[in-house]
Image (cartoon, rainbow, N blue to C red; front, side, top):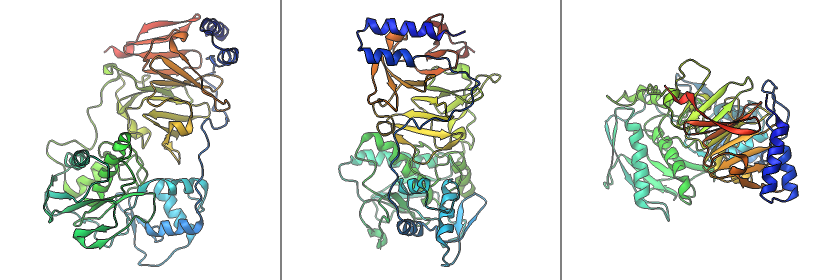
Amino acid sequence: MFDSKVFSLLVVLLIKSQTHCAPIENMLTDVLIFDRDPDTVTQELPDPTKRIKIPAISENDAEALLGNLGFNETESTDEFGVSSRFSFGQGISLEEMFRNYQRSVGLNETGKLDDDTKLSMAAPRCGTRNLAKRGDDSKWNKRLITYIIRDYPAGASPTSVQNLLKRAFNEWSKVTNLDFLETKEREADIEVNFGGTSHSRRDRRCSFDSPTIMAHAYFPEDGDLHFNSKYFFDNVEYLEDFLDTAMHEIGHSLGLEHTNTKGALMHPTDMNRYTKPQPDDVRRIQKLYGARRGGRAIEDNAAPRLCTVKKYDGIVDDITGDWFILSGKYYFQPESSNPTGKLISSKWPGLTGDIDAAFRYPDGRTYFFKGDRFWRYRGSRLEVGYPRKISEGFPGLPNNIDAAFVDSKSKIFAVKHNTYWVYDSDADSTPSFRISSLGLPSNVDAAINTGKSFIAFKGKHFYRFQNGKFTEFVNKWMIC
């Protein structure tokens, strides 16, 4: 049985030896307790994150935006689950426009301009309309498709832009029977533009109808790509956003419309930071062009076994106490027989893997951290307004954390290198301490509060708090 009183006493002694001030001593004595009942159902708790500011969007603004995106027309669904609008110019009510939009992005179909709908509308998105006067089999009638980069965003390295675009095209080439070649010839099949209001080679003017539009594209056999230069290139950390967006827009250039399937590259949401087309995208593109011989199959059949994993990225549990170990792009259920990885994106659509840390809050919502952002899920649904920046939702916590967990008082602990932070949404500050004060090594990989104890993982070992101290064990899950 875990003795929380002994652990609290240990913490007090450790803290006093470090000459911390009394208020912090009292706080840590209270929060470093791990005696949550694992059978306890989810609790009604205040939101631990800082409140999201709801954007000021009027019904007139929303109507104009939805009209530009084609949501003012009757919607049907084809065999791929994508929207196809065919009302031939007949208008529909504003309530039905909201329902069409809410359905397409996975919101509750209230038919009203509620807070979730405002947040979704204000998020960066693709500006390509599904409304297209074309056949359902619109595609390129050639295997080699050329593209020209007409200009570059100000301040960005042309070489970096070229490499990212080449990678984005190649990810599609890996899964279907197409090849792509950058050229300087004006007669290239696809023209790539950054900013501006025109596609000069097409003698066509265009604009981004909303400041939230990241890019748009044209369907075959036009295929031009147009990126909004205000995004992506101000910070090197956001280059993954450009790769994700470029692959999405190239999907349109190849003939794919948006999909209602969550966890797909072609879903019309904001950046998911995918690094390749997802299974639903692969199935749809191969329907148009076939599969490349020797290329990546629709399903990933090379998933590793849990015992071959060298490092855990994060561990979360559900309300039944079952664990999910995340490593790379896979998650594992250690309670199963000979557990084999499953794609993280198949359980938590919109989450790409390679996370930094994760925890389940007592209210049942699950948080995932990666770089300077965090994702929040209720069940398998990504909540509206996420991902968010860590600095906005959890001010005081660092980016690129190593591990995170929640104690019985709903305090959130974030660990990075040789330091840990204690986050309390009701507190004015987020104090930090040396992790050695807890008797743990630096650079832990993952951590979890089991309800009766606290366990941290590092490499092939784990550390369990028992009998008033942390004891090191060999992780037998890593032995085949």
